[in-house]
Amino acid sequence: MCWLSKGGNYLWFQHGLLNIPVPIKTVQWIPNLQTLQFTQDRGYNVKAGDVVKVAHGPEYSTKGVVQSIDFPNARLTLLAETDHSLVDVPIRFVIKVSDASLDSFKKDIGQEVYIIGGNHKGYQAMLYSLSSMDCTVALHRQQRTKIQLKNVATRHRMRLNGAMLEGPDMLSFCEMQRRSYLALQPQSVTPPPEKVASSSSASIANLTVSQFTWTTWSASSEDLDTASNPASTLNNTAQLDPWAVDMLEAEMEILKESPLAWLMNK
Image (cartoon, rainbow, N blue to C red; front, side):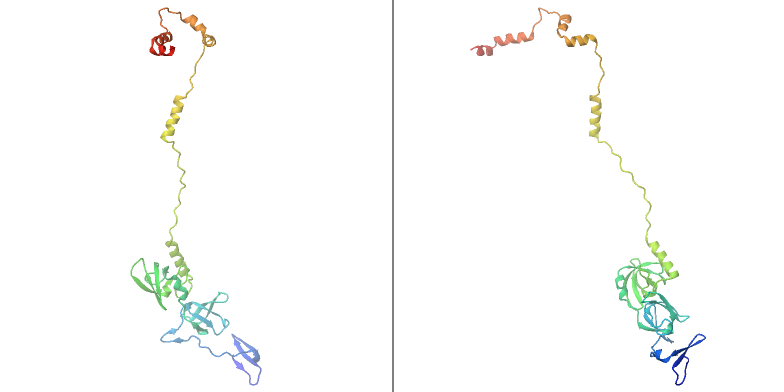
């Protein structure tokens, strides 16, 4: 507000080069809230992860979590809790609602974290504990060490102080994550093993081939006549020898002279 006429019904507000009259009935007075101020000993008492609320300007009443702070220009960027947009405002325009909460990072204790700043930048570590300004981590099973919260990020790309990674820090973090995973080497498809016949089946196969191979034979007209009339073979090829002993008759004679024959006749 730049001017109020005595006894008038309008207030005059200056916006840039413009003077805008506003009816007094539509104006609400808000007490001066304790916005962030610069001090010699602490500077601006705000850090990434703090919850703030805009008290002046076009972004009035916007509430969110501080993402980054530009101290040389006295400005900060907050993540609005309503539409999740990034809002850039002067530091003097905001009030601090609460300090950064570490409760949301307790689930990351015992998990792998990434060191994105300081002397150990580029390493992975195991998170053991958290405090308001730093955390305790162990690098490659070595002795535990303390690192500032702003220099450590979770696998969800958020610093332990509550600020989201952006710009070069985000690119560096993505490269660290890429190196932490081993790419699978391409593997050739192994053909199925060939079926090898066992020794028993092989011997059976060889036996079948060797023992049951068909042989060729020929028959003459004389062989056919012999098969149809066997008596002709005896008449043509053999003559009776009176001195030859018939083995069947000899056996019968022996039986007749044996005691068994005498008992059978009784």
